[in-house]
Image (cartoon, rainbow, N blue to C red; front, side, top):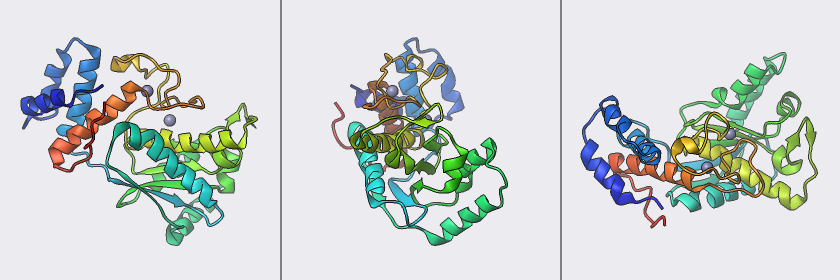
Length: 266
Ligand SMILES: [Zn+2]
Ligand SMILES: [Zn+2]
């Protein structure tokens, strides 16, 4: 359990300091976990990042099922908001037609779904001066053809996320084929895809893999953590990822005075 009073002490110690000047103090901390939690806290406390406090689930076309949108919302609430205690809202909205048209044009202008372009479509081209974090739920032919495996993509700390409705409709893809899943498992997979992507966007955390592990945070590895790009079903936020998120947002809270963490997170 993360002790917030430790973070309160950090706030006193580092108040008014430049982010870069704090690094030598960080580096002198022996415990990997303590150092990581401090790093996360200072990233929130001493930098200018100010994420939105509302997440909007936005279908890109009318044909996306309401149930798919609801599963995304449920997944974010159940697997990201509840375990961290963050005061964030999740709303479902209708198709933004102007935006959908603009996005279709971008796709038409492309001859081939190259890897780079596909990536850009998923993430970068979505980036606009938004007023909330947007989770686009897409179901276009482009993604069906162009990507063999991916069902969601997000840049860490981005305000725009893409998830594909096929996670709910068809389930998980392995080696270019959909694996056998029950309807219940597909629904859970859709929830987890949305929560996994929100962990990137609002948790400011990379995928857990060989390069970027829980050990690097000073926490034990948890194979059922939803931070893995090929997360298991079921899975959930592990303690390390949860503490990382709380520490960052508590830093943002103490800097901005906006209350994000109100409940006892034990
Ligand atoms: Zn990921
Ligand atoms: Zn984790």
